[in-house]
Image 1 (cartoon, rainbow, N blue to C red):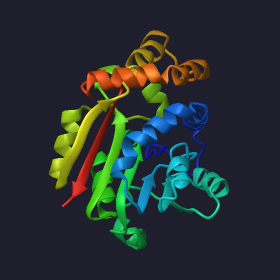
Image 2 (image 1 turned 45 degrees about the horizontal axis):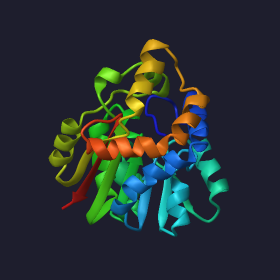
Image 3 (image 1 turned 90 degrees about the horizontal axis):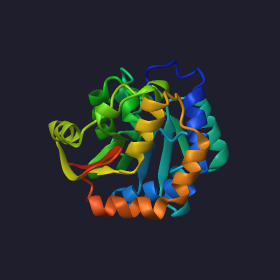
Image 4 (image 1 turned 90 degrees about the vertical axis):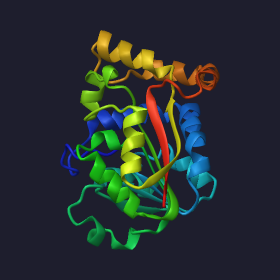
Length: 243
């Protein structure tokens, strides 16, 4: 998880607790991995690896991968968890991005960022810099929260600047010169929970127990998504190819 709101040397208590709770939702994490894996050829780079909830599945399939995060303490945890895997601290909106990360420019067949871009105020600059990391013909895979009407205290506590529409992201990708290969909403069932806990109950963090139940109900949740054909969801998933 990545945030340009906070000093990267400071702790990220809400975000870190949320990532730790999602570690227990193993089936959900694997579903997210399955949803993006076909568009992530090696070598790939993960933006905002956090605690490695998704990274572990790429590593298990022996993909060549570089893990990154803005916050040093996440990078330290990743290096300890995945010994021998490349881990780098990366600021997507660094002023001197190309010079600071020269060794990473155009080195990857795919770059993915899951629940990261919404933490960055200058999202366009962040995506432009993502494109600089990708080889010609490579893919950029982004997943972000959907629908601004769902924005609530959960988003605020996590440092989200906004939520997105599919149309908005498609237009942004096209403006950056990316050929959109896929654009859909994802994880429709989570919309009700996000609205209930964030808007009605005024929670500032997702409780652990609903996440466990959600993970147990995943076969039904995935079936619902297939029926809805990506027309509605709590997240937007988009894939663009660099020309």
